[in-house]
Amino acid sequence: MESKRVLITGAAGFLGSHLCDLFIKKGYEVVGMDNLITGDLSNIAHLFKLKNFEFYNHDVSKFVHISGKLDYILHFASPASPIDYLKIPIQTLKVGSLGIHNLLGLAKSKNARILIASTSEVYGDPSVNPQPESYWGNVNPVGPRGVYDEAKRFQEAITMAYHTFHGLETRIVRIFNTYGPRMRLNDGRVLPAFIGQALRGEDLTIFGDGSQTRSFCYVEDLIEGIYKLLLSDYAFPVNIGNPDEITIGQFAEEIIELTGTDQKVVYKDLPQDDPKQRRPDILKAKELLNWEPKITRAEGLKLTYEYFKSLTKEQLEKIDH
Ligand code: NAD
Ligand code: UDP
Image 1: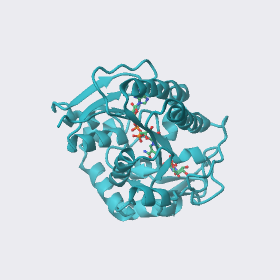
Image 2 (image 1 turned 90 degrees about the vertical axis):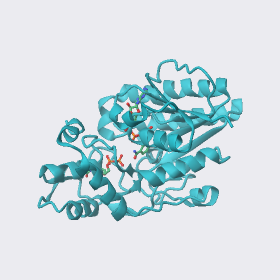
Image 3 (image 1 turned 180 degrees about the horizontal axis):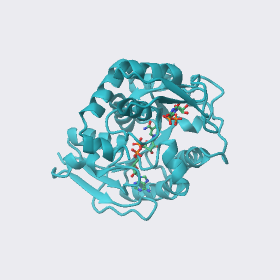
Image 4 (image 1 turned 120 degrees about the horizontal axis):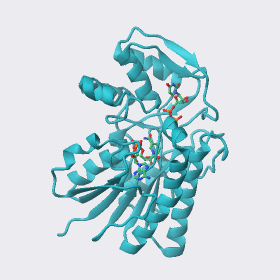
């Protein structure tokens, strides 16, 4: 039987590269696309020698052309960490608007099913906890995070419009904080920030008083959930995340214990509009996809720390500049 062909945008990033690995393992032909604005080719270097992997260095906010058939498109291209999208706000808005428009057009022309990476940020600073998909959110459109949150909300809206008006097969995954190997130590997200500080012998920086909460999902669990959603027949958004909620203060303590560092915590200003609480309601994923996370935070943190420790000095410097 002819193998299926999938386009993955953001292929050189943290999640995109893990998706490439999964589809390769399952025998798909994988086309990766990335402009390397926040990603790194080293995440997919091991795939270049394979004959069922192709890669295009291309900005998806510009016209996207792929020759040959496509069965699936997974749109993961977008700056994702707060320091990235604050540094490149216009590109973030463009990939979430022009980029998705290009990819929906491509999906329509190829008669392909498209899955888009949305985010728990569509809930903004939520006033309900946990957040079910039916919650409309609390987003400040003109605040600093608006460039990301509103791009993702637009992305969901245009995807639903293509589904409704063109009958395109679409899937929307709302991803909650995910961690694991291939995160960049300097990407500003809390886990690489804390582990990087512990490795360098610096104090761990807690923003605000550390009472804000997040719920961290190990990358392998997330990727499995995304695959199940892609193959499902459900077009509305589905939360994928780990509901095990923790305060950032407690999280810092866990990282101190994990790494055995002698460092302490120091407190810095809380960034504007930083959500106070976040925890996915995953009832839908359980019922529709028979999915729930399997890897505990203790296991996932250990695996992630092992990864960072296994990097050579040169590699660490490269992802910690
Ligand atoms: P990442 O920064 O590691 O990966 C994003 C990739 O997209 C990078 O390789 C980058 O170079 C590429 N990219 C950005 N703009 C592009 C463009 N215009 N054209 C082509 N490539 C472009 O981030 P990630 O954590 O892997 O996130 C991937 C996706 O998942 C994003 O859409 C993000 O919004 C979403 N997401 C991630 C998380 C998380 O916890 N990691 C949570 C919610 C949503
Ligand atoms: N955070 C922190 N110290 C850091 C980096 C982040 O206390 O060095 C906090 C941040 O303010 C937020 C939480 O950790 O409350 C998660 O931040 P991250 O950027 O990882 O994800 P997001 O805010 O997008 O969920």
